[in-house]
Image (tube, rainbow, N blue to C red):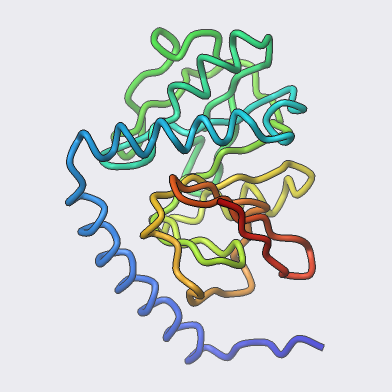
Length: 206
C-alpha cells in the first residue's frame, strides 16, 4: 500500500524541484550553440532507430525553446515516413491538446509562453509523445517547467509511448517526485538510452 504524502512533504518536494529547475536551466543555458546542435543531432538519430518511433503512426513533438534539445530532424523524418505529425497547443490554464500539423515551418505560430504552437485545427491523440523537460532521473521521472501541462495530458493518455529527450547531464540518479507526476518510458541522451518498465526497473544502453 502506497502511503499518501502530507502537505509538508509536498511543499518540500515543490521547493526542491524549484531549486533543481534553476540549477539545470543555468547549466543547460551554458551550452554553446555547437554543443547543442551536436548533441541534438545524436539524440534525434538515436530516437529514429527505436522501435517506438518506427512503429508509431501519430508522433507528438514539442517546439524547442531556448537550449532545449531540437526536434526538427524527427519532424522531417516523420513527414517523410508518412506519419501524422502533431504539436501541443495550450487551450486554457489547465488544458493542452495535440493538433495535427502538415508543415511545422508554416503551421506553427507563437502562442502562450512564447512557444511555437499550431493554430486551432484537428485534434489528434499521438501514440508516441516526445516529451521535453528540465531534469530527469534514471527511473523515468521528470521535472518540467512547473505548469503541469504534460503531466495532466499524459495522465489522461497513458496508452501513448513517452520518450524524453535530454542532454546527458540533465539525467540524475533520482529526483523528487509526487503522486501527480507521470514517468516516461524512455529517456534518450547523446550518451545513453534509458528504458523504464512498469515496475520501475531501468535498462541503460549506450
